[in-house]
Structure formats: C-alpha cells, structure tokens
Image 1 (cartoon, helix red, strand yellow):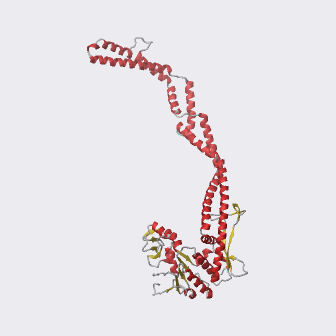
Image 2 (cartoon, rainbow, N blue to C red):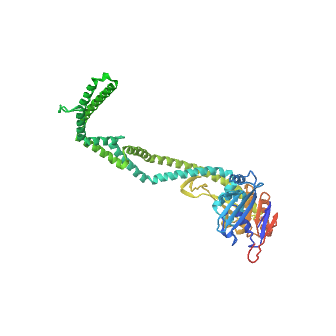
Length: 518
C-alpha cells in the first residue's frame, strides 16, 4: 500500500478492523519503534516500510542525518525499515545503513505520535513533568542543566565518601601491615647492593685458610721461600736469563729487544709477588667476623623473603609502601574534605532545586490557563486544569524553601496535572478525575497548546477522539483543523464530525480473495 499524506489535515477512516492502524504501525517502525515478526505476512520473508519526509535543509534533523552519512533527495529524507520473518530489522536513512536508534533520535523532531497508549503514558507523573518542562522552555532548561551538573557531582562525591567510610576497616588493616613491614625494614637498615657485597665476603671468609695457603705457595714459587734458601723460584730464573742476555745484547738489536721483554717479565713477577704477600697478610680468618657476616645476611634474607627478590626490590617496596601509607593515613583528611564538598553541593543543589520549582510554578500557571481555554472550545466550558507541584519530606534530602525534601536527577518536584470537570468538583489527577472522552480532550488541548512552542512539523492522532461524540466531536474536529494550519495533522478516526474538517480523506478498505487479505 502507498499513502501520500498531504499538507494540512488528513483524515484516515474505515470500518473497524480494516487496517487503519497500519498507518500508525508503519510510522512507528520508520521512527525507530520495536520490530515484531508478527508484522510480516505469513509465508513472506520480510516486511518493508519506506517513508519520504520533507525536511528543511537547516533543520537539526537534516543536519544530524547528514552527519550520519545520509543524503537529502530534493529536500526530502528517505527512510526505510526492513523486518525479517525472524524478527530482525534493518534501517536505512538517506541511502545509508544506520542503527535503528538513529531513527528514534530523529523521531522527536519529525513526527509526534499520539494514540491511546500515548495517553496512558501521559498519565504518568514523570511524563507530566516532562511536558511542563518542555512547555516552559529555557526558563526550566537552563537551571535544569545546572542542577543536573551539580547532581552528578554530588553523586560522585557521595559515592567516594561512602566507599572510604565503608572500607575504613580494610584500609586500617592495610595500613597496619604496611607500617609493620616498614618498621621491620627500618630496623635492619639495608643498603643497596649490600647483599652482593656480603655474599662475596662470606665466600672469602669461609675459605680463608685455603686462600692463604694458595697465596703463600704462589708467592714462594715466584719470589722464593726464606725457609728454603736453596729452592729455585721464578724471579731467580728470570733474573739469570736477564743477566745472560745483558752480556751480549749489544751485538744484536733483536736479542736486545728480547732482553728488554725479559726485564718487563721480571718487573711484573715482582709486582705480583708483592701483591700475593700483601693479600696473604691482609686475609682475615677471624671466625667472629664470619659469624657477623652470616648474621647480617640472615637478616637481609628475612627481608627478601617477604618484600622482594633482592635488597634493591625491598627498598623499592619500602618506597612505594611509604607513599601508600601516607595516602591511607590521609583518609581522615579526605573524609573531611569530601564531607565539606558534599554539604556545599547539597546547599547548592537546594538553591537550584528552588529555582526549578519557581520556574515550573510560573510556567504551570500559564500552561494550565492555556489548556483550560482550549477545553472551553472542546465542549468543556466549565472544566479547569491546574498543576500540583509538591515535594516529599526526606531527612536525607536537600533543603528547599526551608524544608528538607527528596530530590532526583530532575529536581525535587513532583508534578501532577489536575482536572476539575465542572464547578464545585474538586481538582483531581486526570487519571482519576477524567472519563475516557474527557481525557482525550484534555490530551488534545495539551497538544494544541504545545503547537505554539513545539517545532515538530507533523502530528499523528490515533483515535484520540475515542469515547467522544456529538458537539464535543465537532469541536475536536475544529481544533484539529486549527492545529493543521501550523502543522501537518493526520488523524485516524471513526467520527464523521471529526473527518468532516479534514482537507483530505483517506479510506481504508479490506479485501479478501479467500487466501490473502489486502
């Protein structure tokens, strides 16, 4: 089926069950609604909905669509949605595949859909508050943005404060463990590289006798043993070789060079022999020193077993733990800081909540007056609409107007739309105080009032006139016609009094060839 909706007021009529709601269902899919496999004809692979929506090139919807890669076709945005028999769906915008969520984002700026289910939605207090905020415009939007920022900061500060307080015992235990470790390390006072130095000294002291004997024997082999004057040593033999060559070195330069090298060997032997003698004299075989070294090594090993693989790692652990301990010990100060910031934010939030209440109260009076005036034109001349804006006492809340009240991400206000259908009747919530027909007219009046401030170019009303007849139906038709002067209006209706005001009539008929219904 192909439907071309004209500007102005279009009425969609037909017998009950003919399929008028297909217009609503199709638009719902184009605007990012939930896909349902039941929408696909039995035996078919998929259902496809395509829409062509004229959008001014400077409209935010056009800008956002182009940012998503979509292209306008002669000033129109082409949207398509495909639903498979398995329930999966795909969306295309301006020739580009996009997430379904993108269609939902654009929906609010393109079409306002109002049906029986939408009326039920408007009975919720949150939706009523949103409607009032939308009507108020910047008067509420500006303080609401400031409030939202302060609210998020307060939540973050409160969460951090609660975490610190809740984990105080765990953090105290961690601090005690760190303090014990740091005290243990401080008692030993390790130096960087000390473990390697002590290992070398222990090895030397443990083999002192063998090292001394080897050094003494090597010295005797190089420089001779005083207790064995007839023994032959390397220094004596080299000296003899030196003397033998010195006697004839003047006869041949080559031999002279060799004699010089032998002289160097003699000097080197003398140096090494002297160092060996000094090494043997300096070697300390003191068992007390060895015991002290091993004791010190044991102390260092106790640290490396707990805090690091070597002394360098132990010292690094101590440095990091010192910083962590400082952080943990600073919890009390942090708690004080966060508590002060939280209290300041709560005070600020209370002030911003008061600003929101004042702005909503002022807008509510204008909104209620405008809706009441519209109801007079919808055959409810004595009805009065008003808003109840109230707060709930909460000792954990913020102070607004001298009272401590509950608060949330949108302020401290509970907003409720009230209706007094006739003089002397008390104002009651519209969910309780309005009949089906009255509720439909109240919702229509709300939309008519919104039309002056709402930039949405198209309105779709799905049997919003249900339960209404006679003169009231005529007035509803007249109001829809007036709304159609500033926007495109599509109405699915059963009432001839409403359809009579339309600029264009669309009749939905159902045919059945015995196997397929069209």
